[in-house]
Length: 190
Image 1 (cartoon, rainbow, N blue to C red):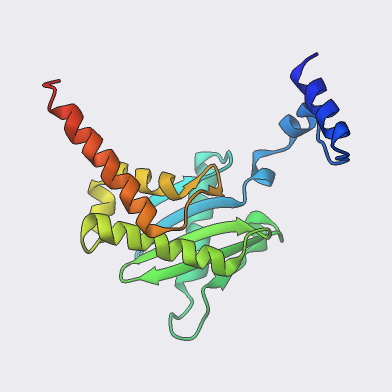
Image 2: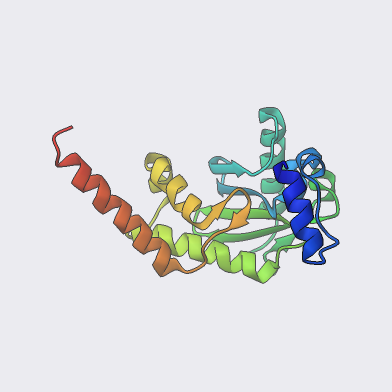
């Protein structure tokens, strides 16, 4: 019996009526399954410092999304507005733009309605806190010159549009362990 048949039998034995066959899951668009659609870090002039989409988007459409989202959040005053926005023309009605403005950078996450706004706001805070810990007072240049480390940090927190870890201490610990392994590997003379 194939895997789909075994899963169907297991779901039936458990009384689950919500089993979705493999073919139906494969045909579902990636954008519908990811809870976080994209993560953008943009400076005050609108230049992208980190762009991560968790569903397939052509490069020209990515540029359009980046510019539109930046326009949406940059015109809002930090003192008078909350950190939540919407732009139905880009993603449709089932999404939220959640952002924080730190110094010269906007940290922007676009998530679907299944994601809690305050949870995403806390996720941005965790990301910034980990960056600040790893780079000792992170600045825009750290994101430019150490993009590989920034992407690794982001992968420790979010992967494939799903939140993996929200505890900043555990993320920092994982990064320190990785750095320790890298240093041990370099001592072998390779």
